[in-house]
Image (cartoon, rainbow, N blue to C red; front, side, top):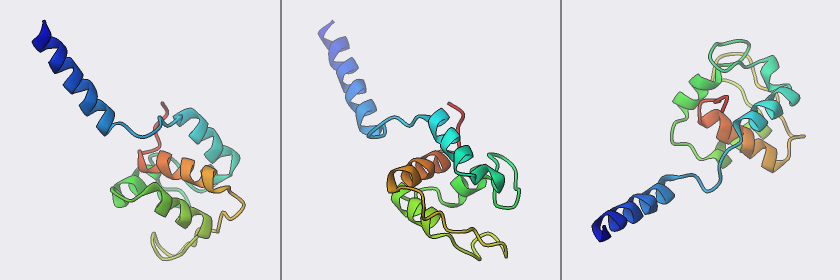
Amino acid sequence: MKRLMTTLAAVAGLAALTAPAHAMDAAAAKALAQKSACMSCHAVDKKMVGPAYKAVAEKYKGMKPEELAASIKKGGAGKWGPVPMPAQAALSDADAKTLAEWILAGAPDK
């Protein structure tokens, strides 16, 4: 029994180390993307005016959310073709980070 408890404690500790600092609310992030008009140019799994969020997640795998959040706020051109992404400067830093975390996770529904 003691061995089982030690093993369970080790597994729980490992899970805590690999879990994100806070759980992402995917539904809230998706609602934020819709409210912020991101979904006018982007879709989760298909290219529209801009790339699919799943393609962004793949290209920027390993990127820190803060870096993508800064790119979202700044806008840009040339990373995904000739159509520029307008700056989203009106987004708060917190909202931009929420969107970045959601996008980097592959834009999950849940």
